[in-house]
Length: 460
Image (cartoon, rainbow, N blue to C red; front, side, top):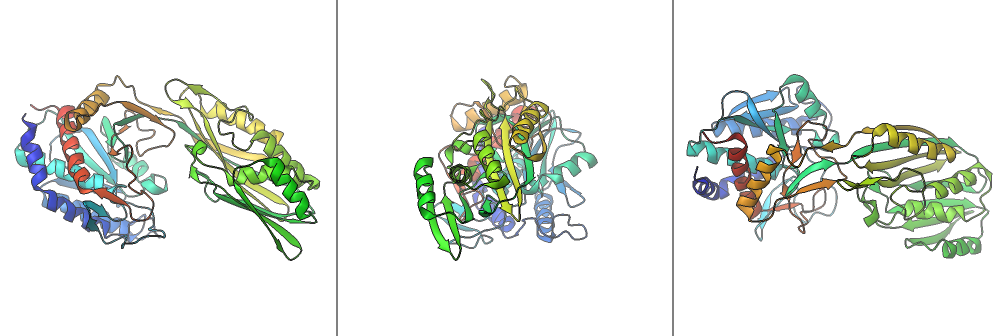
């Protein structure tokens, strides 16, 4: 069919698209206390209800899956294609110069929490569907939009959806990056503990979130002189910034580095492993000192491939394993910590867990390790090729497959890939203050999705 007519319809709905996204942004749909019919809190349920209401007003058939997710479609029969977006967001956080839940357009950008992640892409799908419907397009195969409400906190919404509804054969999520992500590394999360006495180490705290490189860490010592600490700082040779202060009988050491996502620990500067290295160079005595020295040996500062711990691996398709030593606390004679690993498709949860467990045991820690296997869809899949051809047709840019360390909304769903909507070199401040999406990007995304739907579902 002539797609130019579809694209012109999308362009003509520019104001309507922005208005709809503004309505959805007004719901603070981050996870809150559950209520009847609202498993992730009332705002998330209200946002889902509003989205489905808008879809019905546009002439789509909708279904609400018990407040966990919803579907919208205008085609008949069992859908071949599903487009999976989410309506939940992360909390606003600090640093906003605008109201995070009152959309505002400035300099061609629409600001608000969820503008890019992932309400904006969901709205682009809705208006791609409307343009196709209004044009009278007839497709060989059906498709549906699936909207979830718990992607940011574990995707239990989609687990519920899979248990109570049929998942289409092909699925893509516009909740990542262009051109297309077909490989997502496997994930390991480890928690470890040990009891260890110390007369000199009062406490140690570093990291709060297992999937992030800690930007700060601190420890308090007793009976250790500042000269000894200064000598250890010099010997450690770390690039993080250390600060030493007296607090009564204690000496507090603070480390400030650079945070990063656990899937890319090499771009951060881990304040915690730097502090562990520093403390291992100070005679702390006792079991706590021994444990810290062992951790410094097994998980050296600046090493992010797990080589020393014996977990390093890589392949040409998905790259190298990454390891982020992300949490360690010591207080009242007990250590507790966390490690995040992303491993390539040549590995397995069983193999990586075994190697990491051995390293933690050598360091004297008990552990619990779990994870998920890598996710991979062949680059030669007809589905992947059709999506990439749609991207190329609309943007004029080369379509290619990407492998990432993070997990997307389709991880573990057979045949599922991530398709859009971030583009390289543009920081939409996802999860940060003043999150935005360009209005032109909203329109272009709708065109890409319309093209993809036609190519995948094939015009009659």
